[in-house]
Amino acid sequence: MHDGHAWHDQDWLHFADEYDTYLLQAAGRLRRRVPESEVVSYLVDIEANLMALGRGPGIEGRAKLVVAAIKADAALWG
Image 1 (tube, rainbow, N blue to C red):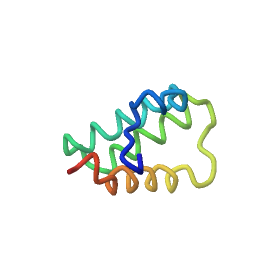
Image 2 (cartoon, helix red, strand yellow):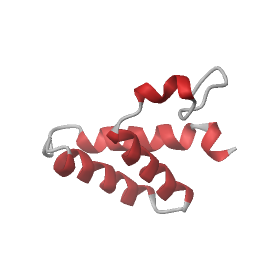
Image 3 (spheres, one colour):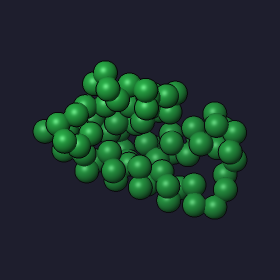
Image 4 (tube, rainbow, N blue to C red):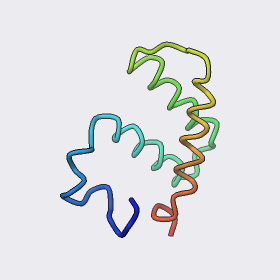
């Protein structure tokens, strides 16, 4: 989070939901050096199957953007 807040701070917990666990899983995989392509596949599977949205246009592009955002988060890597 910005401004010195972390996602798990009490003030921010009302924004947490089930999808946060998927993002945390993806971040954990990246930190363990799982190849980006596998993390993208994980996120695609979540969206297509667990969320039951199917494999619509742009699904892989969105997953790649999420992976890039996780990798760009200095709080995770610092």
